[in-house]
Amino acid sequence: MSTEIHETIKEIKKSLRLSMNGVVSTLQRRQGLDYKINFGVEIPRLKRIAAGYTKDAGLADALWQENIRECKILAILLLPEEDYSMVAEEWVAGTKYTEIADHLAMNILCKLPDAVERALDWCDSKEGLSRYCGYITLSNVFRNGGIMDTYHETLLIKRVSELLENKCGTFMANCALRTLSKYLEHTPAAAARMMESCKGVPLEVAETIQNFTL
Image 1 (cartoon, one colour):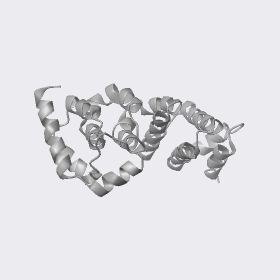
Image 2: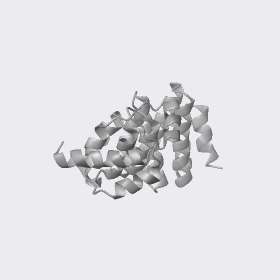
Image 3: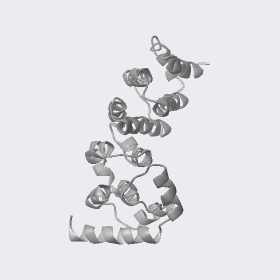
Image 4: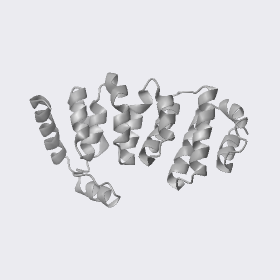
């Protein structure tokens, strides 16, 4: 880490301490967010802090290495777009909490040129948070107008069906079904195509698709 980056991080941490919200921090710790440090700083304030710095890959990487909630989020906000692909796999693998996964998917992962392909791979991960990153990334891609070819539509049905069949829990099941619904909501014509892939899928998957063919 360069001296400049080290000093910048010290400056950022000072801003975080001044912005600390003890009530939010305590609540998040009770919810299981077990960071080394959690200042409880709200997202609008973090965005204002990030706006005061030039996006820089070295700074973003150094912030990401900190076991501090706010540093993780600032790393996502300060990473230059040309570096998104380079860090995507490492950051997905290193994500421990859904809040960070949400910010990572919304700000970086959904903007990757191969976002759909990568997300479908993450959906197939044995790691719960990587899987979650995959579905949340797809939801953001679809929300931003992204579409899939028939091969990837079929693969999405396969991924969601396998997840439900493996009984990965209500939270992940609902997340996967919401992602499928998000795609059908933004791409209504896909429902008719997907009906052909409905044979043998879990009832919840078939019903989700059928709801968009009515």
